[in-house]
Length: 343
View: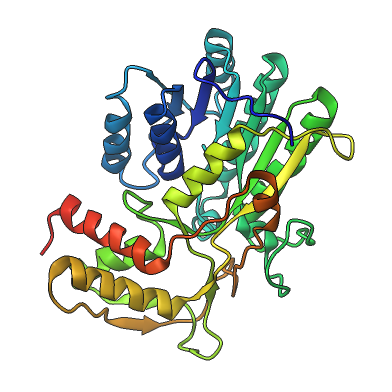
């Protein structure tokens, strides 16, 4: 990898800045004195008020500029690049969610394919020092070999969401090769934490508990062969991202393009994770919490296990996520109880 390119004179563009990961990265960079241009369409895929709350926190910084817009609007993207000429671009804007993609495919094509194409084209015409973009652990599909390594076969995605993320990696590699755009793709593994996405299981389970409703667990009640997930705490993600910003890839195999897993490297059984969440909420509330559980078959598009090898990431930037689920879920539970004022 090349030398550090990041300094406080850089213009950094973060798309999806009102989203979960985009917000945490933007705040970390702003805290360190960088200038951040944020872009988000503030869509209603989940609670817009939560997105606005994140955005309000970022707008407290004088060095933050917000542009409301959609990356699928090529004119807005081009105008933004022409005016601000970002040195480093972090594309976190995307339509997320595996199950949502089954019933709502159009938005995935619009945002994840057309939108990402617009970002690549803008990076081509307004050259940048580094493009970082969000991929996903879902590209590994139903791979049975664990831990997942970046060199593994990823040509059998089991959801449209995964297909769009695999497509992003291919598109980025091509643009990297043709136009010498230093680009880094990150395969995120089940990111969680305070101010997280309400569509994620841990957040939804907590919502259900306070609504007095049962939670649905899609493992068919098979505790011996329970689902495994590599849960990764948001602060770890932000640290890894910030370090990678400083290190664009050198040309290798004809393109300055690299892919990294960014996960916890310690997969947990889903039921263990749920137990840890119950304990965290018990601590936050000062009383015992136990979810009412309903077990159902695994849903189409879901995979039985995610488990990241993080060796490449460690070799590149000397970083490996380390937050335990107990610590991470306690921070989430404390935030949730305070933010929603529940008892």
